[in-house]
Length: 332
Image 1: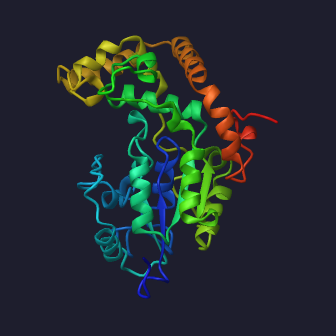
Image 2 (image 1 turned 90 degrees about the horizontal axis):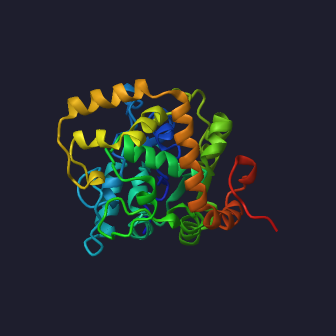
């Protein structure tokens, strides 16, 4: 679908995963700070993400409704109109325009149910794009997702129920196959060509930020960012709060109604926050350690048989030694 007017311009679609370093990239590299990387819709002269916020961008093109909407109407998408909208937003002179939003890989609470539909939309709209997929060791990623469900989304389901719901209408509807990343990475490699897809483990970023950011810049054929601001981890889970709410899940019933609580709740947010903060402060570190140890064991038992073989396939697509980075990988 490329035409003579936009052949020189390059697009990057960074599609997550959630809980895998997306906020860091949106703050540091996909923020307007790089002289040759623009953020779709932000304009050529965009300042770096203000106030330390994360500059998510462009998902509204592929997700139906306004930016941030999470629904997909499978028969209501026009790729030509979407491409025209993208080209209009990309005007401004920077060499690369980035669409960056972890929603594009599907949401972990719902098992990434619409990731395939979004993938086809991206292919049909931007077949000339480059694709960045950042993933994370699955046991840590699932724990982070469930902690987000509990702490930020007022979730009240137990971990056992979250992992193995038998109610197809329940939110969340977790699917362990969401954490078998080779399927999504392989699909994009087939659709866009292996050389146009960079699959990068978040642990490589954690180990050496400069090297990982330079790898992304090489992939985009732009100079490495001379000085990255906002070093360190972003959007880190508070596992002490998580442990407190795992021990006292009724606290979330006081908060705002959310889908993760069956759209029920007493809707007393001030009291909810006071109870959460108080319970967190009173939770001993040994209780936090015990809760995390128990939940990590349950998560490993839930995932291990699926992800170890999948990670072997994934490793062949990345150029990184996943086993050395802590991933479960079958041998032989």
